Length: 267
Image 1: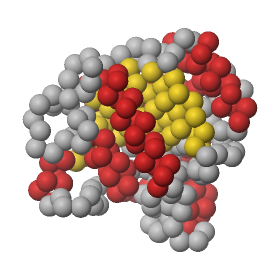
Image 2: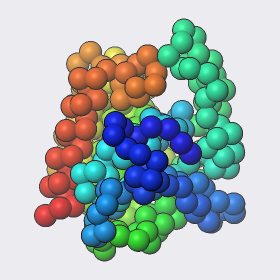
Image 3: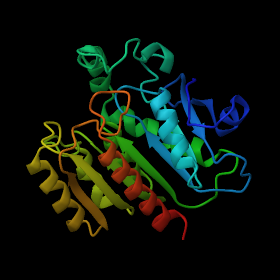
Image 4: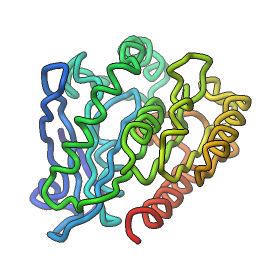
């Protein structure tokens, strides 16, 4: 992996701040994962599992993981499409901000999104959590998770599978509520986390009735949660390498994520 992580970082600092590991997976093979940690800080920090969007591991994900790490966390961002190929193999080869390129990429990418079934995801997630907890410098105890786009579904599933997932954030998530028996929201009664959701406005993958159902399910499960629509923000609003990027909505999402992790993991 490569790519700039922010202004003022030299190559040595970048290597210290973020690197790639391989995680042996229960279905066979390995999943690459980015690891980001606070620069020059050897203390133990809580762990955060970062679920990427459908575009995959790339410089924008490195940037985002690095920003979270600088708040005082060790961040693990796995290539959840490892069955389909390496992060490099699956990464966009064109500039997604150019007209038509984002749409062309998603025409290729969506089949692999659909092949990541709930059964596969629920076999994978414990391996990601185990890898996160086994990283040098990760404090024992509660961990957090954040997901973007399809990654928000995985973040919910992580909390349903593991009672020590204490914080879940999902931004411009899609398909969080469906009619299927394995809909992510159906796992919420098994969770013990605090939740923060920042939905895109007029998102076909998360319509208003689904947002209402998500909120009702969170309340019925007795979970502390924020379930807000970001006015004017389009699906994919955090991804600065696409035309969907919305700086104000992105900064709001980072502020709400930082506050959530501080409340649940830094107490």
